[in-house]
Length: 397
Ligand SMILES: Nc1nc2c(ncn2[C@@H]2O[C@H](COP(=O)(O)OP(=O)(O)OP(=O)(O)O)[C@@H](O)[C@H]2O)c(=O)[nH]1
Ligand SMILES: [Mg+2]
Image (cartoon, rainbow, N blue to C red; front, top):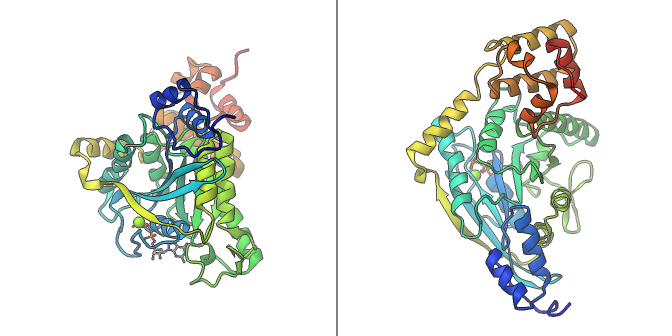
């Protein structure tokens, strides 16, 4: 390929890319930028958005992955009150890109000590950031959304948990790509649950199942999930070359890189893959700079109020609030089957969100119509059975 061995910066938009093509230039960077724009990712920078509850370890994850202490951490009050980018400038030798930039975006923790109104403001600061970053084109998604959750945090169970509310808020600001899923869960504080490998594995497995179900419910996608200890030295993790060994001898942050790679490859996100492949290597000389930033206080009261209302609506009681909710609740009691619980909860949440409250609303609807309303969440065979049993709904051929 002509010119493929030269170094070249990534084009910033469609116009620049087109001009390059027209001038006869051919370079892998052009293909990568083109692929990125097709899936609504930035053509010239890679963004990993870190979100999570207060104190879950977002800022610590930035410091751990970038081998720095640039992001402030604390275990008392809500520490981070801005959406801030930390940039790692790299060279991609393989693709001959001299200025590949990987950014970790640190965000304020959900469940702020300043209350629900502050949470709304914090979530909106993420939307402002994505709207106004110079290298993000309109409606671009972050290459990855990393949901950071402490593995021993119990603010996760149930419909009204902080974790559920956070996912709800997140789904409102258009960061999750349902067509090319971009979500990875990082369970931090990995060594805090056990050190004995067998017990550790059992607890990790249970936690992963729990998180997977909740994320599927609120975001409608299946995430990758990995475990990580952000303070490996303090917690005496054994080393193996560039990696640290978790109690089951999994290597970190290799497992995180591999999970990211699976997601990025599925999406066809070559640029994201390259940035993560280079950026996660341990011990390369990393210079990290603070980049673009939006303070939560910059969010207008109007936007904050709008998000506040959405968050409050999201915690309305499920079963007692509607006829269909009650019918599902009774069915669950009658069947007394715990393996139905998740699917029933999902139906209750979806009906509430779609404002379907009376069984008569469902009688005028086919399963096919309901399916399109549920999109991107799929109706499982288990749910079909429940809908058939409780509301007499069936597929029309
Ligand atoms: N042992 C252990 N401690 C951690 C880990 N991650 C974070 N911490 C500690 O947990 C506390 C909170 O970490 P932060 O990184 O400030 O959490 P955050 O999510 O940025 O918090 P906010 O900005 O307030 O939302 C700090 O004392 C960290 O040192 C981890 O993986 N293991
Ligand atoms: Mg923080």
